[in-house]
Structures are given as structure tokens and as C-alpha cells.
Amino acid sequence: MRLYVGLVHYPVYNKHHERIASAVTTFDLHDLSRLARTYGVKRLFVVTPLEDQRELAGRVVTHWTSGYGATYNPNRKEALDLISVCATIDECVRDVEEVEGERPLVVSTDASVKRPDVLGYSEAAAMVRAGRLLLLLFGTAWGLEEEVFERTDCFLDPIKTHTDYNHLSVRSAAAIILDRLAGGHPGGS
Amino acid sequence: MRLYVGLVHYPVYNKHHERIASAVTTFDLHDLSRLARTYGVKRLFVVTPLEDQRELAGRVVTHWTSGYGATYNPNRKEALDLISVCATIDECVRDVEEVEGERPLVVSTDASVKRPDVLGYSEAAAMVRAGRLLLLLFGTAWGLEEEVFERTDCFLDPIKTHTDYNHLSVRSAAAIILDRLAGGHPGGS
Image (cartoon, rainbow over all chains, first blue to last red; front, top):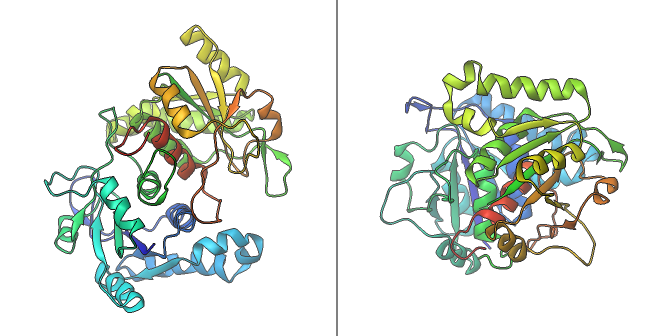
């Protein structure tokens, strides 16, 4: 499995559909790194161009990977060890390329993408199983901004349920999507 | 679908396997209520015997359902409206019984339950689809304490992946489990 995940804080939308850089949420770092470790993700990139936010994320990671937290909770260390803090999506792509020797397929997630060429879950899970190199992008705040889509090779099908409600947190959405792509649970892909 | 969810703060384990009442985490209320709304859960019970914690949970719910938050973000209102704050698991069961006219099957979740009679995901999803009345319990902190199991009719199979890591947040675990039970996604149950 060669799956990488990027948690994107810029460019994303705010409530008013304006382009912003969102704040790093420490809950995201914990939940997503534990999730990434559970599903065998190779690296979790935390993407923000804001230096103070990169510092904050770095401080959290250091606390749990080499500070007091590492002794207090070694399981947490194992998860947070997966985090790399990056300034841009391009930087993540380059980092993956350097490690893997090839460019990853960049797959964006979006709660309401209306495109004909979306990647279904069975197809995406088959790619993961086949060892295809993927970088899966999740947007914080109100989701990935249009500009990200220009760097995107394909879009993952939005999570649809039998209700009309479509407002999951990025933490919930990432958990559901990683389980669908890399869970291999009975009856699932 | 007649699925109810309980987020249990007592009795649960702490890191040292001692029985505690954990603190209510506002992130849990938001993530789990949005998740519950997305998957058509009928009610999300927040269970804690601590009065100040019930007050805190109640204040958060009121802010988003009838306070400023309700106007600021109506989607959030729709989710938080699903929350009921209860003192005990028995109280949740009684509440469900009152609404539905029958006792729910109480299903506990646990990251490492070692019992022969666990309920698999396909079976559990089939029960949900068939309209069986279920109350699904999630433990906060280090998980549901043994005493809860005496009130439990069955246990859901722990989330297993291809890695040996088994330390998801309750937010992630709940997202994955609800998707498996009520998601009905292609290739899933």
C-alpha cells in the first residue's frame, strides 16, 4: 500500500465561499494521525503556508514524538511520527516523489463535487490494493478551494448516504474514506 | 432505520484501567451529532452522571439549537438537535423504550473485545436495514468499562485492519462503524 494523505489548510473555503488559510486544529492532528497509522498510510502531510501554524503543528508533533508525550503515550508517538508539516501541496507532492521515485496520483476529496469523472470507492480501493501511489487530499474549513482542483488528477466520489445531510467534519470524512479505501472489512472493499 | 447511539462517559476506563467518569469533549458532540444526522441516527445520547458535565453538554447544545449558533449555522442546529443528555445508560434505554414502545437491543463497541459471540458488520448492517431497534454504545477515554457489558445484549466486532495498530479516537471509530452499519455504499454493507 502506497497511500499518502494531505490535510490542507490553504487554499480552502470559509463559510462565505472565500479563499482562506484555516487554523490548524490539534484534534485533527491526533485523530488523523491515529487513523493514518491504523490504515497503514505512509505519511500524513499537514499543509499550511502560515509559519506560525506550521510551528504550532510542529510543536504538537515534537511533544508527542520526542517530548514528554512520547514516554507518556508511546501509541500516540507511533501515530504522530507519521506527520510532516508542509507549506504547500506542491511540496507534499515533491516529498512523495522523492521517497517513491515517481509522482503520486493526486486525488481530491470534496463533499459536493459535481463532476462526471469522479473515482468510485471500489475503483479507488482496487488502486490502493494494487499498490498504486496515491496522495489523498482533504480540505479543512468549508473544503478545498477550486485552485487545488487544478493540481488534482481525480476526485473521489462524495460520501452519500440515505439522508440529505452532507456536513461531516473532516475527521469523520477522513475516517470513513480511509476505511472504504484501505479497510478491507468483510462486505467492504 | 431505528438506530440510536450512546456516547458513554461513565463507566469507562482510564489509561491505568481504572473506572472513571471522563470529561465531555465538545468536539465529540459536534462530530458525532453531524455523523448521526448524516447516517439517519434517531438520537445521540450523551451519557454522564456528573451534573456539571451534563450542564456543559446542555449549554453547547442550547447554543447551537436555540442560541446564536442556530442562526449562524442552521446545519449545525440540525445535527445538535439530535443530542439528549442522560445520566445513565439505563436512562437512555428507558428513553428509547418510551419513544419506540419496545426495548432496544443494546450493542456495545470495543476496540479489543475478545468474545466468541461478537456481531459482524454484515449481520449488524442487515439488522439496521431490517429496522431492528438498536442502541449502539461507544465508550470515551480508554473504552467502556466491564460493568457496561452486563447491560449489553451483544458486542460489535472490533475494527480490524491490515496493521497491528488499534488506537482510533472515538470520533473516528464511530464514523467508521456508522458507515459500515448504515452507509450502504457500493461494495459495502
